[in-house]
Length: 475
Image (cartoon, rainbow, N blue to C red; front, top):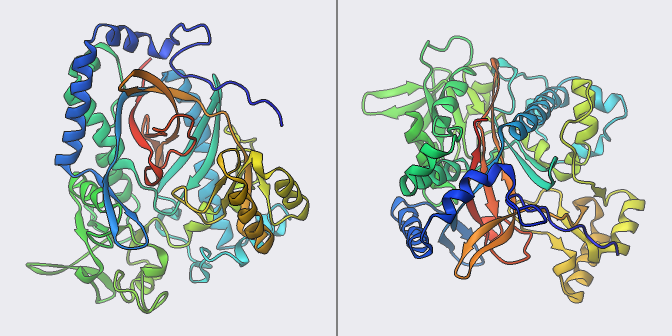
């Protein structure tokens, strides 16, 4: 086994000196009283508890509601680094949207032999109901989250794409609000690009995607599965911040060929529905007939051009980790350019040679389900027991097409506050991208998720991870 390279620490150089991005912050930190900082940490936790910033973890019995741990050391990215990242993110999102259009129309990428047909013909996220239909404005992926990891000074890689219903933006916004409330002097001292206008930008971007015939001020609503959903806090938060209506399926019905919302003054038409309900539950007449969360007949209205659904049904194909492994080819096919942001090297277990390699080297690899999310259904070889590895090998052999494998990366670290002082922890980054006919809008920063356990590479909140404020410097 090769010896992994040492982790890249984003705050400190190997000789202990401070990297340029963190110089101003560290000067401020040196001036602070440690006991005062610990008190601020408790204040932040109480703030999150009062605000109700929680998420649900689904277990064998009932859903358990948890507080998302927040760490006060920001993750800081220079303006130059962000400009470079943004170009790569924009290129990838353009390619994803073009890929969705092609997949539901001429399928040129399949005809060219660049992508195997099996990747979508056996894919539950691919919807025949979308074939031949172009959403209003030609936008499929209205809101995208691109998960990035860093392994070196100029080395960012895409870990996965979230083009179905990316979540977490409310935590990005609340993390910033918390930091500004606790340390206002920091933001007058260090030029940090704002993120608080995201809801306004989201509302503007969604309104720009309204179908033909909508009024000058399109009616936008957020469709939530309800209060028991793990991301309900975010649904309510975004609707409130956008000035949009928060609705459940029972609030909506099809009237006169439009999707309309029940109000005290009768039913009113909706132009854009930002749905946080999965495809299968969106329309019981088209998909799951047992669904109580969707709107009967909404797909007919959609296909007739009467409403915009964001993100478009069927975009979950792009979240598939087997599709992800072909993203370098997808980017080049639709943009004519080499990818600016590389993928993590990936073995597709559906291919016999790759499967053989993964089975032989599984103790050194991370193995994931192609449809998995949230850190579930995966194996991290270096931290797994022999029994866990043996059991996972059996799963791989039984259903190889369900898995991909990747090397265990030397993820970058940023310190967190612990009882014994600052300590490095691994992290990733999810920038949020808005797509409209007018262009692509990337909020400067995003959600930084951090592993709170020493040595852990799993950053998901459902697996014990926390979050940090992400600063992009205005330089």
